[in-house]
Length: 329
Ligand code: ADE
Ligand code: ZN
Image: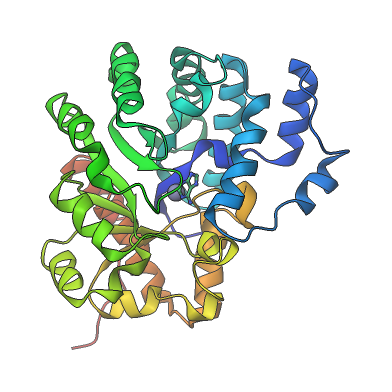
């Protein structure tokens, strides 16, 4: 039985497996520049975040209808449930779709169909987090938030993703302030490739409650002390970091050092179709590469519920499913 866990850093577009990509391409008459799934998989060799994003955005051409987004989310939820996920906070990138002429309503309603039955069908509760593409303008982000207004009942929070370096959090000060006034929760990718100062900015300027990645936090001891003191959760994605060469190998991943420093770490899959594994695979990978104990894994699983945007009662109920082993006095 896999450990019950919450997944808090998952791009739904990054769950598009080659088989589904080809199925949707055929359905929608989209020509992919790959002969078959095997050839497509061979393209999954990345030098950095941008080289991944190029493929990630181009493959989205197959996602056109509500049915497509429903199929995408349904496939993810089934896989996640099989790896112990009981709660998923799911990112989506509306600008990557509206730029292709797919309205935000198609995306949200399509995903919503799968999310609405997820608890009954898969035992997985869900939240949706709308991400702004940080390499587009602040105006575009604001327009996106405006376009999302009719769907806010389905959206829990906002996030910030895409190419990080050169696009600091402060660029999105205004749109986060509006999101806050609408009662939305706030997260942002920071410190994946960008410097620790981006993490500090995300906290100070955007008021984020949780940092996505935060991988480079250890470079700034003052920042670490603050993250520990304020119990700011980090949503780490170990397999992603290796595939995008943010770390040289899994054995060099800072997760263990971050846990030892007292940081509230969680383990997530980011874009599992591209990075070689879903969240349970990430747990297994760090267990062996970093020599994490069963207790370490339980701490990570518990952290995932503590860091989730769930009500206190739900969190308490979830925590009882991941008890820590009793310590001998
Ligand atoms: N969009 C999808 N995956 C991403 C990642 N790892 N970093 C930034 N933006 C992303
Ligand atoms: Zn991400």
